[in-house]
Image 1 (cartoon, rainbow, N blue to C red):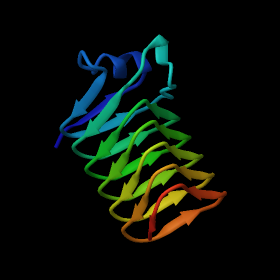
Image 2: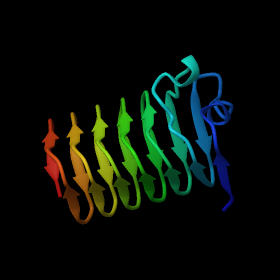
Image 3: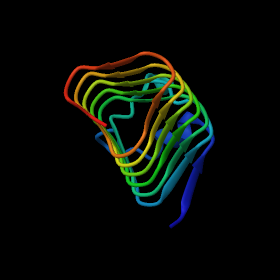
Image 4: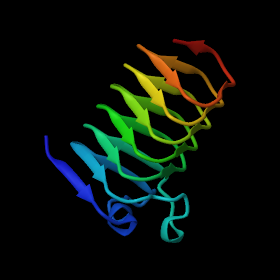
Length: 138
């Protein structure tokens, strides 16, 4: 499985389709911050068939789906649902406006705010506050 590496938000935005969605069959490494208004644009949804590594912050307007592990060095904001089949590590705060499903371990070094349901397959570690608006399964 190949890994795509992007170093700027412009390179990442170039991967979008006409609907603002990004689909990568392999793994994706993002070596930059990707703010919600990256260059006046928006990533509506992001699908990664492998692993996803983000060296800074990541904001996704709708759903984020990762078939492998997800590592975010900074903050992660997801406007819809977040599905991670493997481990999820967030070095800052994690804010999910929909449901959060993690197949293995969830580590959040900051605060965790989930407006929908929270489902974690294995261990849950949150250093800051924890808010869940829906059902909890961990």
